[in-house]
Image (cartoon, rainbow, N blue to C red; front, side, top):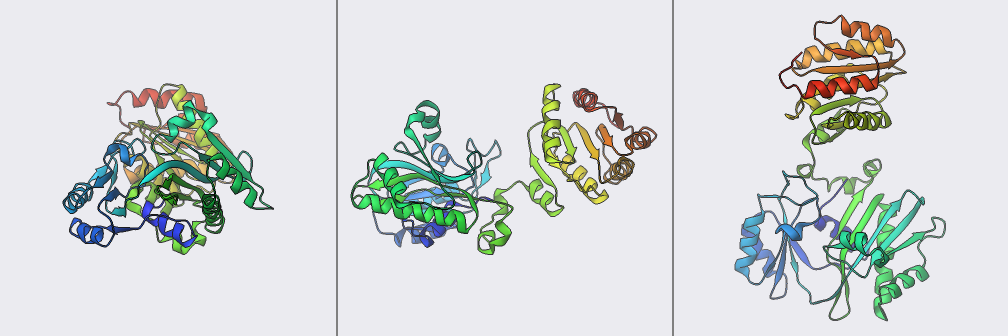
Length: 392
């Protein structure tokens, strides 16, 4: 689960991580009042969306007077911000953050995440922070510093000092960085975050270290344990179909292809999508209906797939283990009838009673293609998707 920048900064301050003074507004009429409560002669107006790269597309503006504060708020609120991380439709801007500005001497990058390869918490930092950190990592990887934390010992002071020295910090800045890193580490563990990112972490002209931006991702499997974090959820920033899928215990992710995929098992779903690509098609979604497939789940899965206007054909790939294939086949027929599926459907069944399942599908009146194996199923669904005139 992702949260907004202003919400992340609320958590930062609770864990002793310094961040700029700021206020949020949801109506442009309140923008000037908010800026008047923040000392200074300039202000930053920042669109709040669950995506990075805002500064490059007008989502972060420096206002030099109250008229600009108001105008930037008017321009942002109610719009959809399109960045390289949002897709072409962008994300709605319902809130803007107005912050105090600071004279900046240097920008750093600092993040902490769960590194699955090493099975450790890892800090990642760089002297080259800011909007182009991805290019820094790709072109000058030697500027990226990593630090692994032993889970038994926890984050040690000497490790924080080493990072501070690598960033060329001195004196009180070393202690300030340790406070920030310890706060990030405690926040990651106590709130079950999967990644916390500060980009940039800035050094002001007077030597203060501030988290100028903030991003936090939380482990979906643990967020139910933290009601305070769950309150931060903003469903307007999430895919509507993915939200519906969660209600029925379905794992669904929207993609940009034309072949809807319904599979039981995440690994099998990935393999199915790979094979569709190999055969020249493009998956419209990732959809894992889980091991305990039921009629209700199959019906809701079809509804989700067909709600995507780009879907030209559907591939169902089910391995019958606990649930027998003939039962699954009957569920598919019922679902196709109830949902009134109007695109070609190819089904590959394997496992217990697979032959009975295929027989049921072949003898139905819905024109469903019962494939003998996955390779054949992928070839047939790609061919059907490319012929938009074919219906069942």
